[in-house]
Length: 175
Image (cartoon, rainbow, N blue to C red; front, top):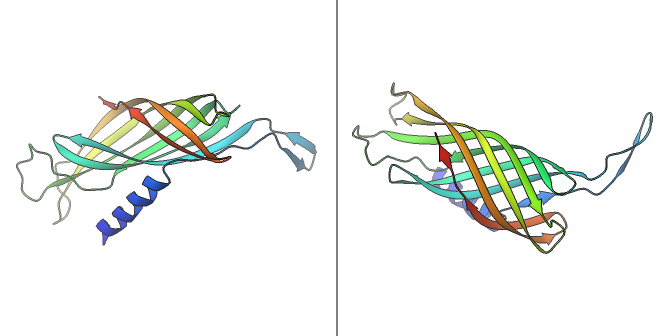
């Protein structure tokens, strides 16, 4: 059942890879008069990735989100988790599998955001862990924690005023 849910989630996110919301200058009615918020918006961007750890293939679900300033700079956070359990090639204990997850800060700069096709450069810096598990219960092998730095370059297409689709590359450095 979990594999079926993962496959459906993977297909949904593959089709709707990036959704961004950007608000125009708005005026809010407040108790103490009108307040202008300028060009401040928000973005939420689910995506899928693929990587390997010790020759084991891993499907990764990523979620980025943040505040967008002047349609150029996004400041926020991210969370990544493995969708599948994986067994590293060097693992010698039978029945052991691993899980991956990480989270941290996001800074993203976008060039020419009002053009049909434009560039965006995300930088994610955070921490993560890989943890060993067993179908029989908790294993006392613990978990490994690490620093994660991932810069990227993405090509985006404006599909609708508040929806974008992107494709690109990132480089994940794990310390």
